[in-house]
Image (cartoon, rainbow, N blue to C red; front, side, top):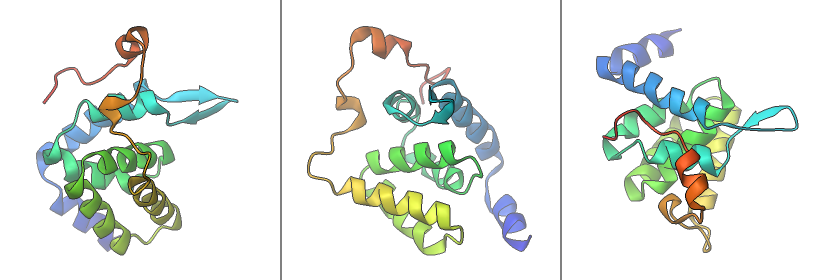
Length: 140
């Protein structure tokens, strides 16, 4: 309970609205297969197109969300934000008390070091696929 209160007090007022906006982007671009909701490249590309390094605190907050899809999307985008995003993931891993959150962060950090990893902006999509991605209402 104390941790929740600290999180609410430490999160700036603007972050709540931004969190909701980024959550909507994830939900609009979530994949569905085998009757399961999940993250795919469209989800990651859409979220990445909406954020800057200034959104790292909001993405870190998303890592602790109960929605596993939000956790995965936030971790995948933090990796794509380069050194500041990876540093935020490492710091979050040290604070994480939930096993699922630690696993998501660990997997994202492992993927960050993969030699064949490419930036989300470089992911090969057709023009039709790119236009079907639903990002933010306004780009930051």
